[in-house]
Image (cartoon, rainbow, N blue to C red):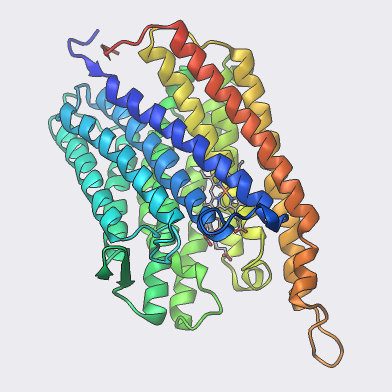
Length: 465
Ligand code: HEM
Ligand code: HEM
């Protein structure tokens, strides 16, 4: 029994905020999926596909993703260093600023204020707010680690540290821009350099928002919820260092067959291929951990979330390097294959692992048991089916699109007009909306379960374990 208290209020605040922004982002996702096959569902000027797509991606990455990262990282951090946060009040201010920032970010995107860089659309005043937020997070993470009461640094801490440093560097460098007014700025880099820096940032946003912090959760909550220690600490450390080393070089795989110098593309591809190894280091570690007692899959409802999450991560990290190859890229690039890839990672790996972590945390800080394992199981199956249907449909339509674009007549002219290739996507896009609906129903079961658990228990301002 420890003699210190871990603050739960801020952790809870971030989790609830993250769920709230998740609902907003997912509903917008559903709407834009309809807009793609039913143009009348665009309501100009604010609610058009062009504006709402950026709301969808940013609210989910920064609201759902970063909100959960802040809350769950603080939860993990305190327990691994065996002390409360060094600056609890700062974390509370960070929580309020976070919500104001996401709200402002969403509204400005709706109003059409954008830097036109994917995942870095927010204009410079919001960027400054995000950097301040991140500095607050960094100060608390590093301060608390420096003053830790446990000498050993468990692997999740390394993943959190990598997240803090990498996101700071990436975000600041890619958002260097010259403001022309309060709502408009121009990227400091021009032409091909701008594209290169943007995709160095873009892919590493995936690496350090959708991968390293989620692995921190995976490595912490899987052993905690199953009671099985992680299979190999050494493997996790080797995988960690090779992952952070390789990730930062891969951005150019987004720019294959573009004016970016060929050698930079090749370098990106080489590191992209190499990335299979560290990614699978964690996949194997996860499998061997559960493999020491497979019965947990039946007896512990969270195990299947974590195992299915890491399975999607494993599939994602085979698919990713494959589509980075020139021969594959020339077929699937610019097609719907890519959103298929994206949503296997986000809806499968990220949302499953985060939801399972929240299922673990909420009963602990409400001093109760989960409201219903049955509801959690229903949530699991809906999310799984919705996600699979989404990704598989997109892969099929992506290959079809790529093949139609490439088809030529004997005289070398294109066989299909662009419009013809577009209208063939409609049935697939309709299917994607159905998939999104199934996924959303699953997430509603999750929210209901979390809400009922909160009602059933009694919030503890702090806990000792
Ligand atoms: C070994 C790991 C991975 C590699 C090598 C990889 C590789 C790639 C490649 C080559 C593309 C570009 C496809 C194209 O446009 O032609 C891509 C796109 C993307 N990937 Fe991955 N991927 C990996 C893991 C992940 C994970 C785990 C996630 C999310 C959870 C993810 C999310 C994305 C996103 C959001 C894009 C779309 C970017 C855009 O065009 O807007 N990837 N990935
Ligand atoms: C009901 C669930 C969802 C639906 C219906 C949905 C729908 C969509 C649609 C229609 C697009 C635009 C695709 C295009 O431009 O061709 C998109 C893009 C995207 N969504 Fe979702 N989405 C959902 C869930 C999520 C979740 C949970 C996340 C992240 C946590 C996410 C992250 C993204 C990202 C990063 C992109 C950009 C992909 C790219 O550029 O290739 N989505 N989504």
